[in-house]
Image 1 (cartoon, rainbow, N blue to C red):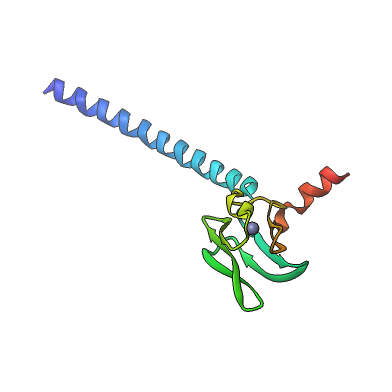
Image 2: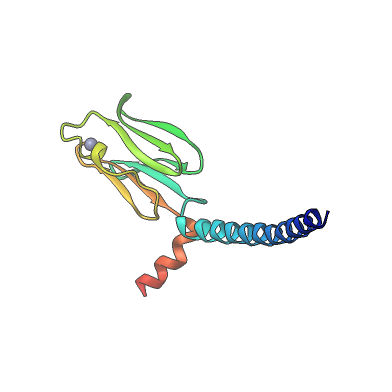
Length: 136
Ligand SMILES: [Zn+2]
């Protein structure tokens, strides 16, 4: 009987501590989430595709999509947006350098296809202040 009471008390103490741990963990997750959103540059970012210096289109990195870039009615490059990153997955250029370039997600990162004059550049309206600080 006494032993059972002891166990119940112990159980109570642990559950209270668990509640605190849970609250602390939730707080940590929340803080990490906010910091991540602040610095990841994923939120609100867009990728602008230009062909021969002219804007072909602007696409949100928040939305998974596949963009066929056509020049004179022929698809020359394929840009895929997935997990807030833009990646050139296909191209008909001989060097294939653009396909080999890493996926882009941060402000002012670019993928360039020189033979086709295709440029994909990330812009993040939330990152402009940071950039101004660097420029000054
Ligand atoms: Zn290329």
